Length: 547
Image (cartoon, rainbow, N blue to C red):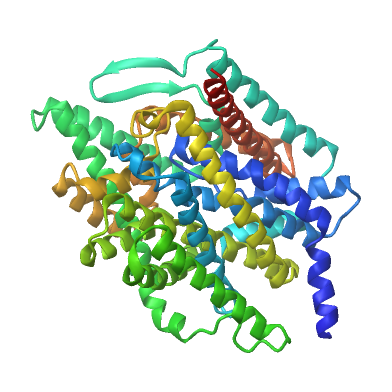
C-alpha cells in the first residue's frame, strides 16, 4: 500500500462526523467519570459502553464502518482516564485544608502534562506491547468483540437513553427536590456506617464489576467494619476512633500493596523484554516517521516545562518526573494488558514518594507529582487497550492515536472544569471519607503525604496486598472494601447480586445478547446520575454567583 493510500485510510477512519460525535460524547463521559470517581471511589472502564454508543450514533448518520466507530469511541472515552487521574489525587489537597494553595491553572497544568506524557509513551511502546506481545488486554478484546458482534438499532438507543433518563430523574428527586433520603435502612452500629445507599449509580457499579471482584470487595468491608471495628472494640483492643484509623491504614496498605504486587509479579519478570522492545516509531517506513518523532519530542519538552515552570517543581524534579512517568506508564500498560486493572493512583504514589525522598517539594507539589503520573498512567492503560481493539478489527494505529489525543486534550479541560464546579458548589469539606464525595484514592494520597494513622496496620496491609495479588486474588478490591464506608460496599454488592440473578434469568430464557443489554442499561444508569449530579452542581454555582 502506498503512503498516500495509507494516509487516506486512516483519515477516513478519523472522519469529521466521528470526531464531532466523539467530542460531544467526550464532554459527557469525562464529566460523568469525574463525578463517578469522586462519589463511588471507583471508575469502571467506559470502553464497551462508548463502543455501543459510537455504533448507534454513527448509524444514525448512515455510517457503518467498525473502524470509524472504534476511533469515535476512542475520542469519547479518552477523557475518562484523565478524569480518573485527577479525581484520584487532587482532592487530597482539599482534605488537608490546602485549597488556597492550588488554582485551576495548576490543575490544568497537571492534567495537560500527564496527558502529553501518556500519549508519547503509548506511541513509543505500542509495537512492543501490542503487535509483538501476547498480552490479552481483556478490556480492549471485549470492546473488539462488542464492535464485531453488536447489531445496534432503535431498541438499544431506547434502552440507553431510557435508563439514563430514569436515573437522572431519580437523582433530581433525591438531591434537588429532597423527596427521598440518601441513606436508607440505617442501623446504629458504633463506628460502622451501616445503611443502603440510595444510588442507582452505585448499584450499576456493582452490576458492571460483578462476580469475584465484588465478592472480595464485600469481604473486605465485612473484615474491616465487623472484624476490626466491631470485633476489636468488643474485645477491648482499642476504642472506636482508633479502630477506624486502623481500618483506613489497613485499607490503604492493601491497595498500595496491590500496586506493588503488579510490579513484583507482572513487571519485574518481564523487565528485560520491555527494555529490549522496540517502540512504535522504530522501523517505521512511511515518510512521516521523522515528523512523528519531532512531534513526540516537542510533547515531552512541553510536559517537562509544565512540571518545571507551571507547577514550580524545578528542572531536576521535572526530569525525574518525566523519566519515572515513562517507567510507570510501561507498568500501567503491562498491568492493564494482563489484568484489565490500572492502579493509576498507586503509580502516582510511587513517584510521589521518590520525589519526596530527595527534594524539598511542598505537600501541594507532591500532589501535583502524583496527579501528573496518575493521569499519564490512566491514559496509557486506556490507549493500549484501544490499540488492542484496533489490532483485532484492523483500525489504523495512527487514527486511534490521533483520536486519543483529541479526546484526552478535550478531557483535560472538561475534567478540571468539573472539579472546579464541584468545589464551588459544595465546598472543599465535601471531599473525604464519610463526606458527599468519598474520594477514596485521593484520601490515600492525602494520608501518605500527611502521615499514616496506624503504621503497623499499613505495613500489614502492604504485605497482605502484595501476597494476595501474587496469589492471583483481587487485592485492590479487598482493600477498597476495607477502606470505603460500609454502605457503599453493601450497595455495590446488591448490584452484583442483581447481575447474578439477571444472568441466570437470561440464560434460562435463551437471551443471546444479555450481556450487551446489561452493559447498556447499567452504563446508562451510571451516566444518568453522574451527569445530573454535575448539572445540579453547576446550577448551584451559577445561582451562587447570581446571588
